[in-house]
Image (cartoon, rainbow, N blue to C red; front, side):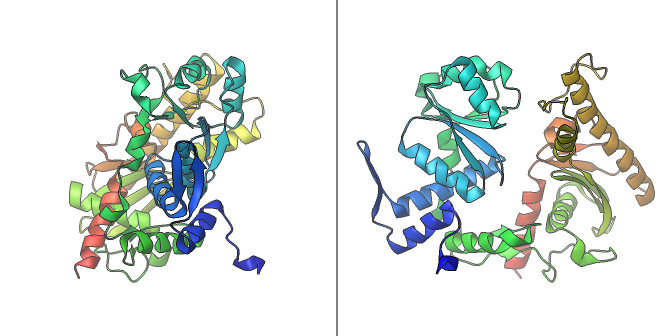
Length: 364
């Protein structure tokens, strides 16, 4: 039946790996790789890419020759729901620039032999914020500091599946929860702790409807109390900008939710045809003298002002004018230094909270 067929590349590979794990899937002059190996390896690389910020719907450019790494990356990106955009390895100059710019990639994966060609066009690709370098022996000194952050492909493979013995899951996207539970069950060999209503997280929730509170906000509250004390405020820079307020007894008592910076800028670009996308960095000055730095000023300093304004009101209502304010989330490092009210930056705060809740539940 059609309804029984796998619906994605990742699911198709997983089904084949379960059915014929030792059957060769790819044969090249350099070797032979089975369904089982490819499934496990792409799981490992997918976890590494996710840790670097790759999410569902992201476009990732692959500037690589035909090799087993290309296949692993293709399946790893498919498992994340990201879009693979292969780039012709013969492209140079304007052709290479246009091929990467057309798909609006923020991440490019290439190797040491093709990196020099990419380096020539990086200055005119402001959206590129990360590079993954495969087999970087030819770049022993590393790429120039003016290029985007660069890390070796092997770093994506540091998490070994057999080292994972348990898991804790927090998601605000219910349709993917079952799939992630299945993955964690398969990798860890045990059902994960899922942060949901009824789980004893150790964080009291004093709001009108506790079931509406996202599990990430509960994890943030748990970590904030453990690391910074209470009362406290967490500013989580993600798809939305969440302000999580923790009372002096450690209870989550609500907060505020504002649009996320990236979502806001995407909406602006979509509605204002003459405004092009820009790199999200702080401009040289608040007074922009060109469209690019004017947009950057409004984005970075505008959201910094939003944070300081809301935090000031939350502190006043909480009766704690000097309580710690912890910034976390993907854009925390960028924005926190421009916020007068932020006292600490911890990009891993939510993960720390998940670990603390997992330890509490697993040890009960």
